[in-house]
Length: 276
Length: 258
Image (cartoon, rainbow over all chains, first blue to last red):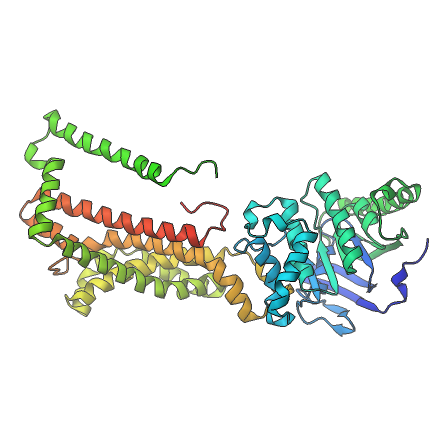
């Protein structure tokens, strides 16, 4: 397999020996255990593993919502102190603001002081993302009139509008039906082709991980450790047809086995593992 | 939007049950089971209404009562919004204040009247204190129940987009709090009207509650009916106004603000 083109660029996000544990009445709960990896600019990295294993915790650390108990998480060479507009987040349950129209949702970030966007640019940026996400006809509608897929597109448009260097997505398509999900994946690839963002995607879907990513990180059942990192060498832009290729099938088999063995490990240990 | 009826249609439909009420009212009189002098007929009440408007200054009583209610509600809610917000937002504040709020909320404002007279006299102030009390405690509960249910997701989203603390307050927390303020206003308005008659027990010269009490002294049943109907009508008008306001300010909400 060919290495991704971006391998030569400096790492944008870096996990160094990151651990996280909580004190609970039943003992110490270890969530992350000595996790180290780097994500370079232009990469699309998927994190896959059993549910409740700590995938979202990694995302929260990069987003700036959680600090590790040991090790360090850095972005652009600096430790992460809190959330910031250079790291866009797409939440599992969209988080579109119900009290704002579609257009005002996209404009929300543009109007914030931190992003230094001149008022003249607002309309152009909004119009651009409304068109890109197929929401132009709904610019003045409230989110209550949107379907799940449209809300997700709106959340992505809103995150993109402030031009983050890095996009964090936490199971963004989990709540969508199969067809909408595929459409969203294609749209995401198309947008990434046009805008070129570095992405970390948390997912349960092996096919989604392979179809979208340049690298897949398989993590173990709790506490999360890195089980294997797999390069996915299909060049971008990708077409749906690659899912039919033998090579895609091979990767799918490898990833699925890795993930399945961790699901079984999780079943065996119960949902929570404590250590004294 | 399929279920929306025309405004005139809805007003008409809302009117129908009242025709029924008047019919039943006449029916009870016609049934012969009740002493007619105990139930004035609807047309007698209507005649009394006209008489009171023309000769007794009924509209001034309406004004005096509506003014008291509005002042009580506005002052009560002005105090309830920040207090309810703090209690809803900070869990520790809630733990601290919850038993006290519920203690005072459980007290019927009427029970406080003797004390209010002792401390605030029998003037307008005393009546407003009672109404403020009623509005404040009903409003505080609604506010803090509502605010404590605001999901932190939107605040997280705003943070990741680059919002600072002030921007989060102005652009996320205020819009999310507004529905609860409006609900608190509606609830407080209802409770305050209910307390009005009691507050006008305190040596009130004018006002619908005072009118009802004076009439009861002289067994003027038709005047009592006029007073009751006036209270209901003014309360209905105020509530309709608030609902209209809510519908316009909260057009974004999933559920229609009934």
